[in-house]
Image 1 (cartoon, rainbow, N blue to C red):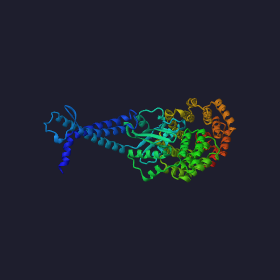
Image 2: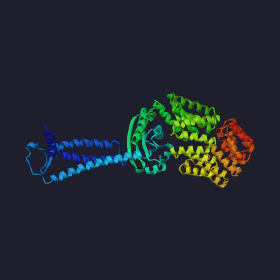
Image 3: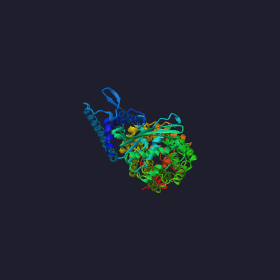
Image 4: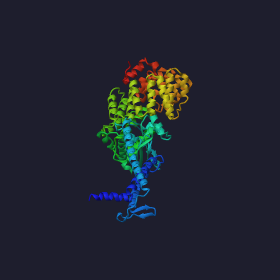
Length: 592
C-alpha cells in the first residue's frame, strides 16, 4: 500500500506530467500578471482578466490530460505506453536539460509567488501607514438620455457623503474642489499634489431606464498605483445599496476600521423610494450654482420627493437651506423664506435628529430671521459634533461668527472648511470677505487673488471685494481698475456694489447713474435698502443713509446682519452717530 503513492508519483514523472504542470504554472502566472497590468492602461473591459483566468484553467486541465496520454518522441507525438511494456532505456541526452528547465520553472514560480506576497504585504503596509486623505473625481456620465445629465455630479457627491461618514478617513475632499478636473484632467500625481491627498477615486455611471451601472477604482495617486477596481450593475432601486457597498469596499481596501456606529450610518437608507431619491438628486444639482432660479427649481424637486416619501429627512434639509438663501440673498420676505425654511429644518430634525446640517441651517435661520445673537451657538456646536466632515456646517457657522463680529474664530472655521474642500469658491470668497471686515486688507486681497487663479467664472465677486479693500485703503485708482472688470449683467447686488465703489472713489456721476437705476427698481421692492444706503454713504449723504437703514430694519432685510461689520467699513464715518448705535443695539449687537 505505501508503495502506491510513490509509484503514482513516478508514473507522473515518467509521463512528464509534473514537468508540464510546473512549466504551465509559471507561464500562466506571467500571463495573469501581464493581463492585470495592461487591462487599465489599455482600457480593456473589466471581464478580460476573468476570461484569461478561465481560459488558462481550461488549458491547465487539457495540458495535464494531453501530457498523460501522449508523449513527444523523436518519431513524433505518440500515445504514451504503459510502464509495464516500456523497455528500460538509457537516459536521453536531453533529459538533463529537461530536468534543469523543470527546476528553473519551479524556481521562477516560487520567485513570482514570493515577490507577489512581499509586494502585496509592502503595499498593504504603505496603505496602512499613509494618511487616508481621499478625493473623488467627478464621475463620467455615460447615460445616453439627457434626462440623466445630472447623474455624474450627483453620484459623485453622494459617494463623497458616504465616505465622509467614516472617521478613519482623515480627509474626504468635497465635490466643489474636484469639479475643476471634470473637463480638463491632469495626471494623478498632479491632482494629488494640488488637492493634498494620497488616494483618488474615479469612475463612471450609466443609467438606462431602470438599470444602472457604476464603475469605480481606487488609485494611490502619487505612484499611480491602482489598488482596486470593480463594476456594479443592478436596478436603479438598488442604487443606495450599491453606494453603501462601494463605501464599505473602499474602506476595506484602504485598511480603514469601521465602528459599528459608522457601519450603521452607512447602511441606513435615507429613503426607501428610488424615484424620490432621483428627485432629491435633481434638487441638489439645481441648487449648486447658488442662483434664485436654481433654488426655486430645487424646492420643486424636493417637494416632489417629499410627496413620494413624507419621511425623507434630507429632502427637508435642503429645502430648508434653499428657502433660507432665498430670503438671505434674493430679497424674499421672511415669511416666504425664513419661516418655511425653519419649518422644513425642524421637520427634518423630527424625522432624523442625527443630521448636523439640519441643526446648522436652523441655527442660521434663528440668527437671520430673529437676530438672535447667542442661542444659535449651541446648535452650531451640535451640528459640528454630528457632522464633523460637512463643509456646509462649517460655512454656516463661520458666517454666523463673521456677522457677530467674531472675526478670528470665523477665519479659523473657514480654514477648517478649506481643509475638507480647499477649492470651494464660496468658502475662499467668504474667507477673503472676512479678512476685509476684520480690516485685514492685505490678507483679504491676497486670499481673493488666489481664488481668482482657479475660479475665474466667479471673478465678479472677487474683483468686487478686492476693489472694496482698495477703497478702505484709499487706493482708488486700483479700486477702479478692478471695478472695470465686474460684469453686473443680471445681478442687482453687483450693480449696487459697483455703484458703491464709484461713490467712494469720487466718480459721482457714474455712482448717481447706478443709484437712479436702483431707486427705480426699489419701487418694485426687489432691491435691499442696505445696498442703496452704502452708495449714499460713499456720496456723503447721511440723512439718506439712515432713511434706507431704518427701512431695512423695519423690513428685516437680509443684509442688515452685516451692520456691525459695515459700521467699521462702509459706514465707518458714521460710527459715532447715535442713530447707527441705536440701530445696532436694537438688533442686539454689542456697541462697546
